[in-house]
Image (spheres, rainbow, N blue to C red):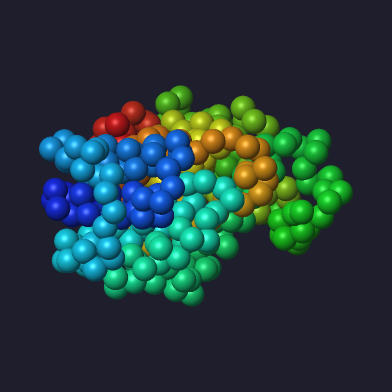
Amino acid sequence: MIHPVGWTSAQSLATLKALWSIATLNGTVEPSPAENELIQGVWVNIMRNPEIEMAEVKASIRPPQLAAAIHDQEHRFRAAQLISLMPYAERPYSENQLILAERFIEALGENLHRMEEFIGARQKHSRTMEYDALRKLGRDVFPFEDPEGKHKEILKLLKDAEGDAEELERYQALEGYPKGSLGRGFWDFYAQFDWPLPGDPLWISEELTVRHDLIHVLCEFDISINGEFCVSAFTAGNSETFNWMIAMLGFTPPYVSTGEGFHPDDFFEAYSRGVSASRSFVDNWDFWPFMEHQIGDLRRNYGLL
């Protein structure tokens, strides 16, 4: 197990109250449906304390009270991650919610705006998400058309990419792997959308996308916006370094412009699967030795069901 998932009733209730306080600005406004769903998703999929009634959650709490309810560093860090997610349940983001969230996070000994340690990972994730969205437009559109100049960074990366014939050949060989294997599943995943394989001149880098796409295959997350959120949530739960803030802030345009919704229940269920997995499929995962294994066996053996 990558992260402990046990929360006491006191820890759970205090964290849920903090989320409620942020969503309602200490009871001065009504929470939106998305904010309600997020709180429900945390309660059901993360806290798992059936003895807590939702009526108890709907009460404000002050930052010092939250800190007094959570003593150990691990749960403080996880609570801070959950709290950092709350202001981003709706767009446009609420500056007042961000300010309130920061007070709770600082009371827990963290800092919402201490982004130096996360900025590199966030930029990497943002590039992955943008490239992931753009390749869905198809080869006839991307990367040949960008009239508004919205994707200069990705286009520059592609322009500078020369391809790697040896790497491309290695990934093309996955077509010959046994049906049901991770390698063949990865090849099928790319083939069904006519996406350029790693090593193709229209592809960026193994580091940015392969583990991301293997999680799609292993966990059967589709390529809708909700499916992409689920991949990010699984990654957050399955990694020692990936952060909730990165998972959410990575969804920059063109994703936001689709208008598709965020489904917190699915997000937190995916997070729980990442937490419960018996190994990391994110941090320094050498995936090639796994490519010949059957996907069903991997799911059973590593707690991905």
